[in-house]
Amino acid sequence: MFRQASRYSRHLAQSTPKYARYASQSTKSLRETMAEIIPQKQEQLKRLRTEHGQVVVGDVKVENIIGGMRGLKAMLWEASVLDPNEGIRFHGHTIPDCQKLLPPAPGGREIIAESMLYLLLTGQIPSEAQVRELSKEFAENGTLDDKTIKLIDGLDPSMHPMTQFGIAVASLNRNSKFAAAYEKGIKKTEYWTYTLEDSLDLIAKLPSIAARIYYNVRNPGKAGSSDSSYSLAINPKLDLVGNYVEQLGLGGNESLTEYLRLYIALHGDHEGGNVSAHTAHLVGSALSDAYLSYSSALFGLAGPLHGLANQEVLRWILAMQKKVGDNATPEQIKEYLWSTLNSGQVVPGYGHGVLRSPDPRFIALQQFCDARPELSSSPVIRLVKQVSEIAPGVLKEHGKTKNPYPNVDATSGCLLYHYGLTEFKYYTVIFGVSRAIGALTQLVWDRALGLPIERPKSLSMDAIEKLIPK
Image (cartoon, rainbow, N blue to C red; front, side, top):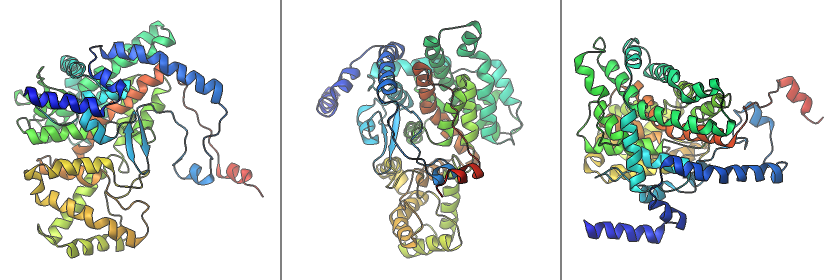
């Protein structure tokens, strides 16, 4: 054990930047670290505004205005930047970097939500002690009050799980420290402290809300029964996702627990332009509290073009499996791909609004599968890998896809299915537990930096035509 720990320490010393090595030994609390960093970031923003405020960073074309503002550089987002070719970086760290540097759960190997949250909020690699302190805080604050439990249990179980999720999250607004302090009157410089408290409280409670919804959806008519008590139980010794798996009634499955730890960490942030992240930022810019801001993000995430993609992939893969069997040949897979394209449909799980190369999140999940015999031997997971090796060539030949490579949705839902989560509509709730890590991080920084209410200029088609040179 000692020799293994020593090798790990030497690896960190060799591969970690100086600031990360320093942070890895820190015992400062998250709040103390934020209080140190914020003045530096405020000064950086001040310099950008005063010295470079008139610098042009891009053009606005008609296609940007009518094409969903795609590609416009018009939003400040601190925690992550998505490069079309390299993929996502969290404060400059790639996914492989994070897998090497961020502390896992005790006995685990994968990134956990607490480690990723600390990195996103502070830009620093947390120490193990700092991560464990966050896990302890989440366990202490994750219990739902009776009003929230009664609200969730009173919802129609046939209602879409994301609708239930958004309602429950919005209802917690009654406990918002920021809303209460704002009503009494506080300095703008203090906004971030109350927003941080609300955000940490909400993140702590999201798994309990999500697990309660899962129980009620799976067991209609039994809401509030004694049998449902496990959905609210919290083990103070477990991390956020470790408790979530227990609350889902799936505890004891180490492989699933590690997968969800990785899934939730990787889905936590993907810069700010996606619908859920941008919605939280937009609503939050009106000084709506964390609960209202994130509930709005959840309803955006529920849209078919955003958070439902992995369900569509799974349905497509299962339909293919039914057609070609468990031991498909490359020719059979290629034929099925062409039949999908020739019918006017897209191949789900391939391409991305920004990426023009394989999604590093897909690569990380595929590596997770390859390292576990029970996954690499699964017919569904094996088919996903086969498709990922064949589809890019077919899509290139088809010639209508800017990015023919798999994105994270190509495998994420299929893994959930393998582990026995067969309620497809619930998959987006898991995504919603994850995305809070990034969206609420930025909400804290919106307050700390004093960013204004978002108010872009809109134009009618007639107004656009008047701007076009004759």
